[in-house]
Length: 395
Ligand code: NAD
Image (cartoon, rainbow, N blue to C red; front, top):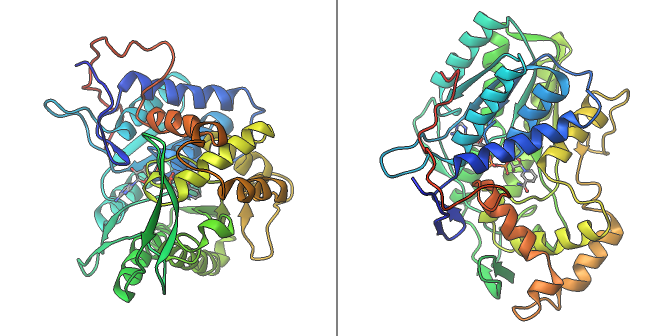
């Protein structure tokens, strides 16, 4: 099949296996270029196929030499359809891990279900006995509750009143004003049910009850705060409510793990182009400005740089730096005063005419297509390639 990008809004419905392989390889090369980390040896990553979860799995395997199990929800290729990018990423990861002599297995299915939790636990029992680190990195539009069967949908909306601000169509650079209506009480409840911490707590409870958590186990989930400018639609909006719930879950989990000296952390990460963040209004324009400023200052990072810092300079460093709320902050460079002052200064003047010079919209677009394996050097996108790729060690 000759595979080209096909976009529908902020979704790309095709993915390129060779491009995805190269993405994974680039991240592995980055980690191998850094000092090895004295870290965990058995790592479970829930949501391991793209974004922050993928970078977590790569850092654990190639930075710490850890055995990994990845859980994700991806689709293989079907007639006339490519597989999803995460599918190709996991195929490339499994092959590279095997070459490096590392244990790695993948579980494809709904992580919110009891069935996938049971499958994962069985595998840990059979192959490892215990797990040292669990990264919880799900970003999902919906969740079926495993006990009640209720289907929740998450929305990204402000709370209380409508929110109007600038946004960009990153495909054509058109800047326009967007108004997002406030969420209803039920939409808030559903978003918290999808992106809050209930499922994270369910995972940890199931793992602990099965006796597969090592003494001193660590678990981490990711959050985002961002600047004032995005607060209405993020921090103070429906997703922010879900993140508050996630933070409360971290405290519940730490309590629950006391007897085995376990700890749950929230890591507040940097805004990056992922399949999830491109769906949030206003955020792509903010990211385009942020990237330009951070690149100019030489402090720009992608998922893999963030994850290396999380492992090497936070979780497995001699002292673990936390903010006053007990959170890990990897958004320290993004939130620097000089960076945010510059974003705020440029925000008011950015428009369709000056977007290319004022922002790094070009970098945003490149990162977006790269998520799906497009635009990588050395790949001939006019050539036939085999879209039917198997993931070794998939369960
Ligand atoms: P992503 O969309 O790149 O990855 C989501 C992962 O979840 C994928 O591996 C996907 O397969 C998996 N997944 C989704 N639904 C699933 C299901 N039902 N069962 C099993 N797996 C499922 O997302 P991301 O941007 O890396 O986000 C991960 C976390 O990081 C989220 O909590 C997000 O809020 C947080 N975060 C993201 C940013 C950002 O800018 N992207 C910044 C800070 C924090």
